[in-house]
Image (cartoon, rainbow, N blue to C red; front, side):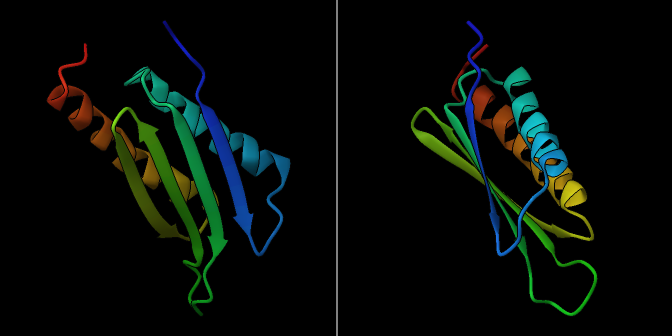
Length: 103
C-alpha cells in the first residue's frame, strides 16, 4: 500500500515562491520510496540572520510510527539546504527501517 504523506511547508520571515514549495514537496515525497510508513513531513524554511552567504536554513521533521526523524541544514540556497537535509533523513529512514524489521 502506497500512501501519500502529508507535507506541511512553512516559510519563516519570507514568502516562498511556488517553485521552491514544489521543489521541497517533491524532495520530501521521494522519501516514501525508502519507507512508505512515513505519516507526515513538516518543513521549516528560514533565513538566518548570519552575515555570510550560507544563510538559508531547511529544517525537516518526519513522523514515523512511534518515532520522529529530524534534520537541519544551512546552505547558500534553500534547494541545497533541502537536498542535504533530505540526504541525512534518507539515511535515518533506512536505519529506522532496518532496525524495525520493515521490508
